[in-house]
Image (tube, rainbow, N blue to C red):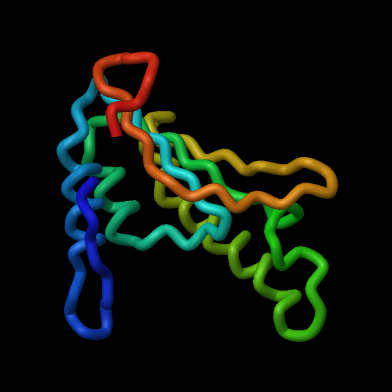
Length: 129
């Protein structure tokens, strides 16, 4: 366990640096899995995915499995915003020739909140991180 701290507006970016280092050092035989209940992939991470040689699998909530689905007031637009962000991500990764894949979780009456990063080294069955 290696704790990191992220306070962007105070110039503290340990988490961002550590995460990018992990993504950037993944090898062509590694598989990196990333999940987020609320899809707002930082552009820096997307750029790191694109420059890496590893395979990436991204899993996020569909607009129907998002905790804001069906919300009232201004919050009802949040799922639309996340959908737009995922569409922009898909445009950016289109040239990856399938090395970067994006999936959405969708199951009736369920919401999706899983967050994490898993890295499988050299075709191993279980992640090392």
